[in-house]
Amino acid sequence: MRKMFIASFALVFMLMFGGVLTAQAAVMGDTQITFERAIEIATNAVGGGSVTEVEWELKNGNPIYELEIYHNGRKHELKINAATGELTKHTSKATNKTVTGITVSQVTSARATGFAETAIAQAGGGTVREIEFEPKNGVLICEIEINNNGTKHEFRFNVSTSELLRHTSKAPKSGNSGGGTINHLNP
Image (cartoon, rainbow, N blue to C red; front, side):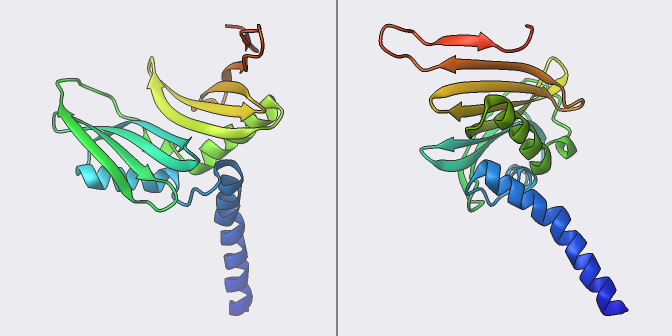
């Protein structure tokens, strides 16, 4: 009976957390480090503080996290290799700015993956190029950028309600055409 319980628990654990990592891999490629772990690495490097921006993106085919943290009168900008967790850049400068940080529990890989999957479906397929969490006018927003055969799609979601606030697309320039931006929702 005990072995069956342990096996059942292990299966539930794998389905709950393995599913998140599988979905994350499908959306974010070689990313091995979750949003949660990237925040932990960055705040440990700074010694605490208020996280005000978390961004995952592909730069030259490599997944990276960029974070902005305010701590003890300094603005810190950090880059973390999303495949290895290595802190690759950390700069800081003095600031008098007072900030309200992100509620870190709202910035999860599961939430990012869910928004990205919705964006991919709305764009008709494509590759995720960027996922960013940032407060705007007191609301935590998740912005997703998708590239689908050269057409750049940008999505904006309200993190608290999961509402899709904006979807625009811009076709690539070709010949005499300058491409064009289409707003898929009411402004």
